[in-house]
Image 1 (cartoon, rainbow, N blue to C red):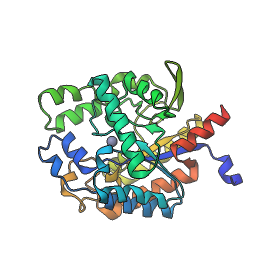
Image 2 (image 1 turned 180 degrees about the vertical axis):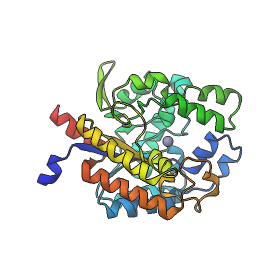
Image 3 (image 1 turned 90 degrees about the vertical axis):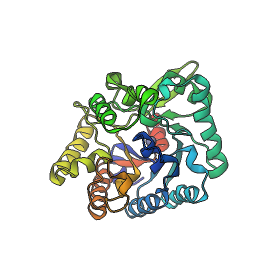
Image 4 (image 1 turned 120 degrees about the vertical axis):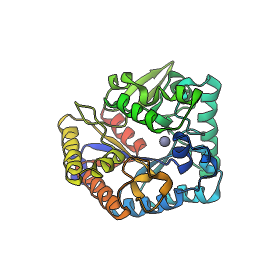
Length: 317
Ligand SMILES: [Zn+2]
């Protein structure tokens, strides 16, 4: 490790590699199952961008996307980065794990685990629940499968607002809409720490690595929120993110930030995604903004995969 790297606080970078079908289903579109995949194009752009900046990545994989060869190849292409870790993002990306029976939760996690081992030859050690849903049973299953960390907590103060916006925009109806009412963890999510912490699960132990929010005021700072802000004002978004990183350093918060595929897609790329926040920007603008944000992240912190961030935290605590 260079002297410069050693002086920087640890941080991690991940992508929730959600495919278009997951977004369309969440929006209540009936034709979600026949949606085309944008994983190959998203992977190509992310690999180019992160390769250029020499950044590592943790890729949260949805089990259902391991059924098509072209999607598996897209997921495999991240191996060309300097460091990659694959992690579990459930089988069907249902954002209401808190309403599932225990067996269903077990299947969502363990079947994805097995599919990742067989398709990628990789044993995942981390999990993030879709929609930042994290019931106790998820944690018990992760401990049983000997996972090192969960990353499903999003301790933001805007969860109730985000959920209200989601419910207003979606066409979900009936039971699914009822289930979606607990999305983003509700007010309780904000009581969680904004930094990695240890959890005791029955006899075992598990780390929690929350998606970092702005210290003190707890507003989101991940890249989709940044590009959404930038669609209103680029200057305001850049100032906001710079301040967030500064505040993380001042408060000793070791950040974990995430990307989503739409972060590298512009409005000309996919008309189906037009409803997603930040999708009003043209592709070139979006890529330029995300490149700027990632470069600043790498300059401010020692960015690693999540499992490497955890190893470092374990060694210093
Ligand atoms: Zn997701």
